[in-house]
Image (cartoon, rainbow, N blue to C red):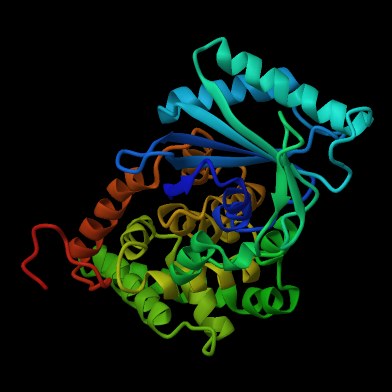
Length: 367
């Protein structure tokens, strides 16, 4: 989700990172890819950002690999510059003789040099020990320039993201735990999954016998929409309802229609349902729910959750084609609005089945 920032106000920029990522990074190097703001001088638009391991971590990309990745991303995003925020509790200011600080300065200097070699700029690089209120920050290039961070949860960007339904999680681990398997719920859903599949098969056979195979998809899509409509934080579907949705999602027409749901009035409830199903379903059905959750998150600018959901989907089914494609799109920073082609295909699929998914087709006269 493109975000307007003031480059000359480092404290606010740094404090906005947790909101833009969706979680508060620790021991991380965060790269922000920016373009010039078309209207406000001294401002830039963050087109994309990515979290990497801190240069002090053992398992990390090499300095050259980070610099090459940054240059490649600038080309893909048509970005004119990169901003870097280094978060690591082992840093100090301005202890130039400290080995940790020297290691981080070396990594950022490699990034700066390689960007300059392709006419790009590291327009700013700042360090802090933590992204928390009253924590000291300083400029990597000029440690004498320093200050203290405002509360990241009270930033303008945090308020905008929270209003859009994107909470800030304490850590990336907390975000991952949102999708951890709920073993008790999975057990109860799995217990009724075979019966749900058997009943669905009987409905499909009847639809074929009457010469209308699409009747099965129509009924399955209607059933899924009924479950979505009754999903909320206060009303979680029964294990049987979850099993019925899991079986319905095995139908390609139903799956396709769900892309349209992500852009309509039921998008938030569907997002909640995919989260519940990701925690409740066995493999490989879990992959469908996690993929749809990733699509929903990606479409609405939550790249952090989208990435974790895609990791979950591909762990459940490494050959899941749509999860692979979305993962490629996310890793190459494809803008979320490009996903609306899939939304349109989903709307058309639902229209052909004559099921209301809460969003009208473009050529519809429905208000």
